[in-house]
Length: 65
Image (tube, rainbow, N blue to C red; front, side):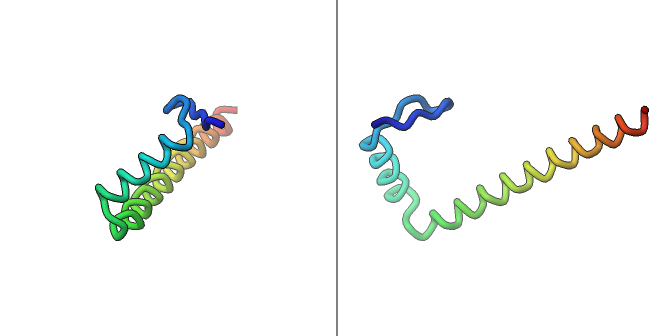
């Protein structure tokens, strides 16, 4: 069974396992939670920014009517 992601392509179980082992060796077990935390903050900030832009556009459309 292969996992298909649009931006990565087809990945099998062995490929995912090799990537995870490489990340563990390269960054170390203590850095992985820190990296994940940073990525989570970045994603949250991006979602907040897009929500603010969407709200501004919707409020501008309401004022034009």
